[in-house]
Length: 253
Image (cartoon, rainbow, N blue to C red):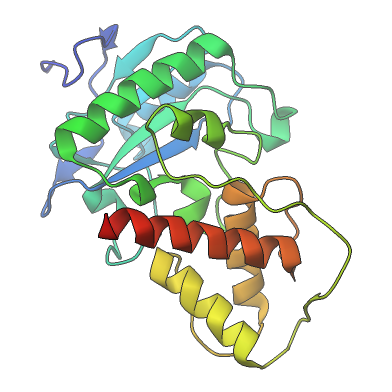
C-alpha cells in the first residue's frame, strides 16, 4: 500500500514492509551508505520482506529521492546501536540510505547532485522534527566497530555549512604524545567522559581499552577523517575538545 511522502520533493514512493510502530518521536537523523553495486540493487533489498531491512529514504547518485517508509514509522535501518539516551536508534531516528559502493567497493566519491539532494532532504527533516545538530549522525557513530558508513570521505563539513549537523575544523595531525593502549590516568577518564557526554556508547572504565579505541575510531571517522586509527593523539583530543565547546556553547546560546 502506498502512502503520501513526507518530503514534497520525493521523486518516487516504493513502500517497504519492513517497519513497525514507534514509541517515541524521532530526534536523530542517521546517514548511511548502501555499500552495494547500484542504487537499484539497494532499493530492491530495502523493499524486500525477506531481508528485514529498510530505511525511510534512498538517495541515488543523480539526486533522485525514493521514500520507502513513512517518517512516523520505525524503519529497520540502524540495527543494534545506541546514542546518548537512545538504546534503540531505530526507534528515534529517520534513516537516509545514500547510494554508494562503500569501503569494499573502492570508496567512490559522493556526486554533487547526490549531496545536494541529501542536504535538501536533511534540512527539511531537521526543520520538521526539530532535530538538534549534534544528533545528525553516521551509522558508524551509533554502532562503533560494527558499522563504518557513510565513511570518512563523506562530506560532513559541507553538510554542516548548509545547516545539517555539527562540525569543527579538525586539529592537524602531528607527531607527538598520545594515550597509550592500556593507560589508566585522568586523561583517559576525561576522554571517555567527553565521548559519552556527546553521545557515544563508551564505558567509562578509566582505562584506554579496546572498546575505547573502537569508539575513538568512530569519532575520527566523522570528525577527524584524515587519520582513522583509533589512537587518541593530540589532534583527536583537541578536536573533541573543540567539538564539545561548540556543542555546549550552542546549547547555552
